[in-house]
Image 1: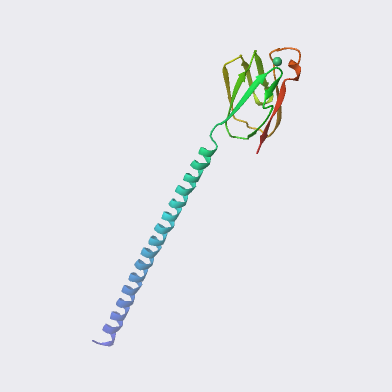
Image 2 (image 1 turned 90 degrees about the vertical axis):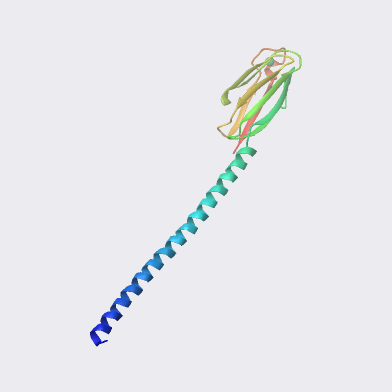
Length: 150
Ligand SMILES: [Cu+2]
């Protein structure tokens, strides 16, 4: 092998080494990407599972309210913004009403049967409600508040 041949062999080997190096680097980068994607997917799945748990916890809250002359029991109710609420009214003796106009809720409460009212509070604050079916001498005192917290 003369000098020229050995130089071109060296050059050829150098090119081969460069190609092998590049291909190896590319494969490594791909493998890294795959690992990152797998980790990312796992994180997304975990976040979705967490969201489902939170959703399950925040399913409809049931609150039972008794209406009688001349009060609601309870008459102060605290609920959470965005969490659905089911109010279940029972009147002991006569017809009452329930009007929480600022929350967009209203119902007639006939005696001795359950009346259900569903709503999902969207704004934070304290909102009054009152009886809007005349029920006797202290009808005007029959009221309460719903407080919506963050
Ligand atoms: Cu009334």
